[in-house]
Amino acid sequence: MDPDAPALNTDGTLKDASEIQWFNSPSDEHRTINLKDSDAQKKCKHADSLAHGSDTDSEDGLPRSVLTGLKGKSPARQLMAKECGFYEKRFTVSLGKDNDSMTATSSSMTVKAKPTQPKPKKTQPKPPPTTRHTDDDMTEDNTEVDEGDESGNEQDMDEDPLQKYLRMRDVIQAERMPARKHFHQGEDPRTQDICEMFTPGELKDKASDKSKKGHICKGCVAMGHSEKNSFFSGDNSMLRTHVCWNWGTHGKMYLKIYQKMGIKPNEHALPNPEDMPSDTTMQTHLDGFIQATPNVKWSKEGLLEHILDFIISGDQSFRVVEEKPFRKLLKYQHPATQESDIPHRTKIWEEVIEKANLAIR
Image (cartoon, rainbow, N blue to C red):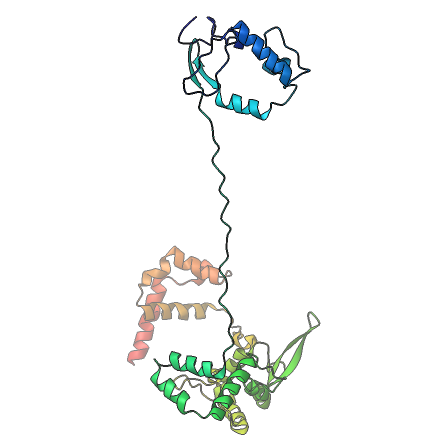
């Protein structure tokens, strides 16, 4: 038997419990029984038969319940409390790798579980106690807070209680009022100038047969314009801009409206002094920007006059009429222009000399 591994066979397998030689520690109160001793075996069998009456011994000298557990099956009975204490104090730990193995035995080592500490309960902070303040407390608190404000402190001390109550009532009423006051149509003071200068109207589109809402300018109607040319669709700023652009014809009517109502004119409807338009200026619709040009009949003589004006005013060379890009430009402007219609430099020189002689005379 290998003295370093008394619990292992020569092939490295674990020996049976009856083949292991047990040693007792001098400090162990409960001696381990050596199963090789015949007397000890008899005592063990007798004690086991008394404890478990119906449990018969096996061929190995162990109870059948223990032997069944050793063969990989669940034990037929539960261990008693005394047996649990016995096996808890005596156990063997084997550490082996390949053929090398180490065995550590202990007869007095016990594993004690750490006592579980109860988790501390989470305590939420309590809210501050609510106290009811009296009038005396309020005055004391206010005097303490307002000590840093010299003017405010003196004003609160000297103020009449009735006046203080009325002032606080007005503040509370102002806070309860809506942020924006709603007016009926034509009653809002911010748009009274629009309501007096313009009248709501509709313009029907003949192409789509739909009506478009907008405003009709009274100033334009007073000047004799039709409702179609006096119709504007847009917001209040656009209508005031119309008055500003036509201040020469709309300004007097606009100022009379404000004098009658006793309100201040809107700044968006007043032009700058340096940009004051004349009495003849008048904002028109898009049709007014599109001016029809007279249909002048093209002629060879007229083309010659325009070329002479271009050369003399720009101090151009007479050879510019000989350049192909210049001649292509003239043909592009009037596709019916022939090559013979465009003068050459000799013709240009003769015309310039003739005009110079007429100017000298």
